[in-house]
Image 1 (cartoon, helix red, strand yellow):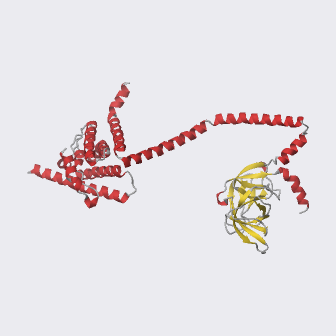
Image 2: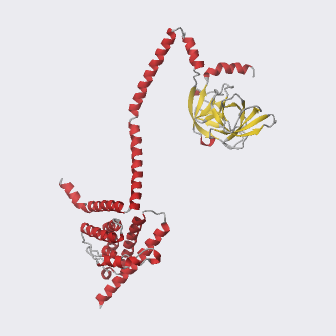
Image 3: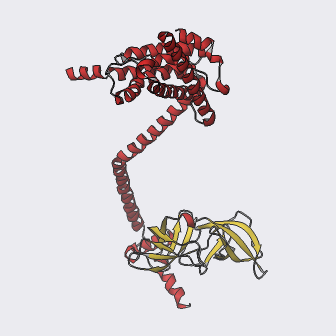
Length: 159
Length: 279
């Protein structure tokens, strides 16, 4: 909830090069445990997406993108984590997975989410360059913001 | 039943996902006018394609029924012909007179369907090869047409193939006239373009305008009168300055030729024999 309020009050007004804005509420997608119930996550994602949509006056856009990402995120996480033969039960955490894996997962999730969101907003590839710039700047700014947030958290915990 | 329940329970997240996405699409198209219009148009396209396929399938599945209806109609028409023959014979027409009437007055001509299997376009003397030959009833000097007009004349035949001397051949010369008049000339190809030929030796007093139709005049036994050839593109002075030369845009596109018909003008055999005596 705090993330959504931060997003609509603060981050929505920062557009990198006039294109993509950082999406702080994506932290919801990264707050993942391997034993999470997919259905309840999708329902929470629906509510979160609709909440953001209400402020953006674009009902359905964030909701669909969020539900889709919640649905596939487990596969993406498994792809990275299982290859490294970690425990079956894991938490997507900066400290437990290490910065490399975490950043890779973060970039992929953010990129896919930005692609979904931008496409649903534009619903055309007619202006492909603008679309690409929006996705790239959105991915870049969101990744930077989430990494910064995690560094802060990690640093505070460390102290 | 147990298996079904187990299957549904195992894949429940899929059903919830689809349900939520469907709800999302409905909200998305309802509350976003531009996106809604795009979705509506895409759905229309998909539905259109679906209806086209289902219509084609329906037509195909109904072929048997249509065939049966056509067969019945054919039987009925044959019966009508037989009745008319009887009635004509009753009023004094003999079988010979009737046969002659059909051959000449009704001018019955048979068309043999053929396919172009080879076609040269950029030579001085082009030729077209057809997939039908003597065994199909094709012989020399039969006319060849397609749906847009005349193509040429059968030049040589073998058992299963025949060679056509098309309009696009320097040796080709076909008598044609300006439609709705009787002013005629000889149509030949001057190698300028695949779409144009020249109608030469048209008298100076001919009444002709750009866009007039050019048709066969029936002076040869090869083509009956009135077959379309093309239309007048330009009116020029003849080489002798005593006549007109018409630049004619041909109706037939020789670069896009596939199905043609060979005119089996058997009724003109007598005329042909007579004319050959003076050649």
